[in-house]
Amino acid sequence: MKSIKLLGPFVVAIVAAPAVVGCSSDDDSNSGGMSPSAYERLGGHAGLLKFVKGEVEDKILKDSDLKTYFFNQVASPIPAGHPSAAQIEECFTRLVASAVKAEQYPGAPVRDAANTNTPDFTCRDMKSSHVGLNIGDKTFDKFVGILAADLMPLVVPDGTKLTAGHISQSEFNVLASALTGTKSAITTQGAPPGPGPFTPPAPSAYERLGKHEGLLAFVKGEVENKILKDTNLKTYFFNQVKSPIPAGHPSAAQIEECFTRLVASVVGAETYPGAPVNDAANTNTPNFTCRNMKASHAGLKIGDKTFDAFLNILATDLMPLVVADGKTPGAGQITQSEFNALASALTDTKSDITDPSAPSGPAPFPGG
Ligand code: HEM
Image 1 (cartoon, rainbow, N blue to C red):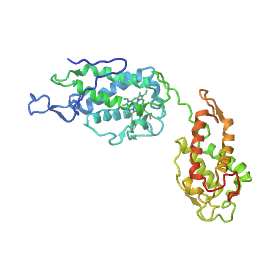
Image 2: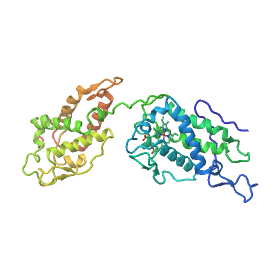
Image 3: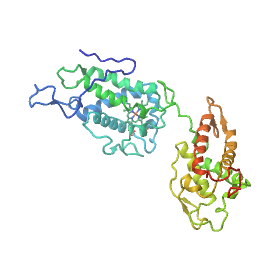
Image 4: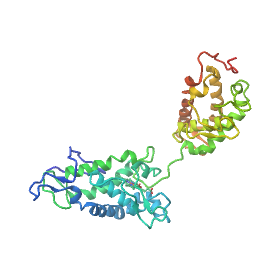
């Protein structure tokens, strides 16, 4: 007889298990040939929902650590876009049922009139539904361990006749791996491992720098007060000082917006190029689509050291924001590794931006 091991949270010997589908044929003593599936033995949707409800309401929401993550569910009203406990239970049931191929996930919106902001909630994928919850490795294990502990009494060894309310070891393993398989989507890298209560995630570099507005203000300051005042660098922006700016070329404001998006895309917070950038004052190109670095610097004959001079200006003004790795960066600060990531993303554009045939510089356009 195979034993089910519950070591620590949830360790199972995953054996090659047949997919648990509509009917199982390992018991042909049943009249009609096919024996009930695991889904049927667990009571179909209603039976699974009852099990999930019991787990959520009597175990998870009573656990001193786990219950603290459900802060949206105890808020009144529940903030828009977040599910009620009842909606979570229905989604969870569908997810489990989909692991045994008996139901579809996400399925139709889940109705709960009591969730006034989101009475019809569409179940999300596991990454979206747990984003921002800062769930650590061992907190996840504790959650799954609770479910596993309550599934265990239902398990009978493979080969045993399967009756209502029971599942085989192989069926258990299928469910178990479906649940543990969600771990990387549900947990947050860098979260305290736990098990422990909810702790708000530390603000990202993007947030600490003031998100789009903060970055744009920084970029604007660099372009207008430094780059466009530098005797060499300003000469490359000859299109921007023409009136009108020749068609297809961005205004300084459009460059600043594109530059901001580029920097924000390095930290994964925005996408480049994004939507066209509006500037009515640029009469020939009021809606400018940000270009790739090669296209936007073609013909500018930018030399190696001219590029370095540009980047040095930015780096010099970023340096005062840097705190050593291991220190907690506050608002307006970035860590040394965040600085390094940003710096190397910028220096990586060098081969696209520079022209190897141009004099190295630093020099004004057209290369001194
Ligand atoms: C195998 C493990 C897990 C599974 C399969 C799972 C499944 C789900 C499902 C199906 C939902 C509802 C779908 C949706 O919100 O769109 C949900 C929501 C939620 N889960 Fe999990 N979960 C797991 C682990 C955890 C853990 C470890 C925690 C906390 C420690 C947690 C906390 C939450 C919270 C707070 C919500 C509601 C989020 C909100 O308010 O928007 N879950 N989960």
